[in-house]
Image (cartoon, rainbow over all chains, first blue to last red):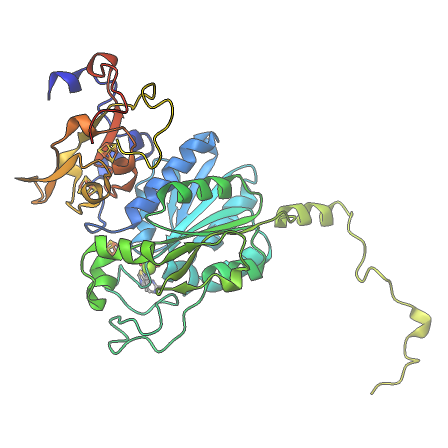
Length: 299
Length: 98
Ligand SMILES: Cc1ncc(C[n+]2csc(CCOP(=O)(O)OP(=O)(O)O)c2C)c(N)n1
Ligand code: SF4
Ligand code: SF4
Ligand code: SF4
Ligand SMILES: [Mg+2]
């Protein structure tokens, strides 16, 4: 160590405060984008100034799902596809807590797809971070609901015949209050988006387009993670507040990134409290004219 | 430093001098930090760490402006920058470097 370095204030990595450092190096491959997204999440948590004890981080199964095991907060590594269901229980049991779900595209939107749409519909107060690497990384690179049309995976060796989901559009149409997408190279904007999502009441969703060189890149002849990062970034266009349905993931100069939704809507817990306090009018609000019943002929 | 249009107060702008620390044993040699450091501070070392990966090495310490980009892009939490202590930072000005 040089004399200059010896006088430096800090010898530890700034993220060490939020890392279970005894488990680092983590299991992710060299050049995997999950680490960048994870770093961004930790930066946003630090920036938020919310007390550490208020956070809970939940993930499902997959490479991204391992994240819960590396963060030095209350964290839960749940079963495949059930991170949102588990997080819903946590939120209802401890409504004052800040619940974060961080998991992969397969976990959240293939096996876990139903939990995702209904949590967004009910406006469950949680922040969902989806690391979209276009495949099931952990199990060797199978087709995911995000796999681009024509891309090769182990289960689609000729190329995927399916059209992928647009996760941001799905989240928005189900009622999410905050929706954003950035690539793993838009680090500062991604961190801002996660920080905004954490401060948002309701179901907030941030999609991170991230390289998986080992399982996805390799089968599509892009072995270097740097080339994947560049492919995603160079073809991205920032379009804030565009209609989410138009936020395409088109690798020919129209991979739309930005903040698409930022609205207010009562959460599940707001509605639940109102119902239990008897503050909600009987349904239907217009009432029913009992004397008219049976008078109208059917057909 | 090159400017697209030279600021009027260019002689007064102070550019921060940064110092980079590499936690060699955490590195997996992905090269993200080296490729995306806009100041050319880093190169890949010829040496290997215990896991058999090459790691970055600082070759142009004076050019580091403490922008933290290597720090936030590293997926391994293996590199970070901090401001150089005053003594090691004798009024680094915008005129320095390229
Ligand atoms: C019930 C169940 N079905 C299948 C699996 C096998 N499995 C493990 S991870 C995974 C998919 C992971 O993909 P994704 O969520 O995209 O995470 P990534 O590894 O890409 O980060 C699957 C199908 C499982 N663990 N449990
Ligand atoms: S298989 Fe893919 S997603 Fe999993 S750690 Fe490796 S690069 Fe990352
Ligand atoms: S802090 Fe910025 S200038 Fe310094 S080495 Fe890192 S990326 Fe380069
Ligand atoms: S970004 Fe991190 S892991 Fe990659 S070469 Fe640099 S220090 Fe090593
Ligand atoms: Mg995946």
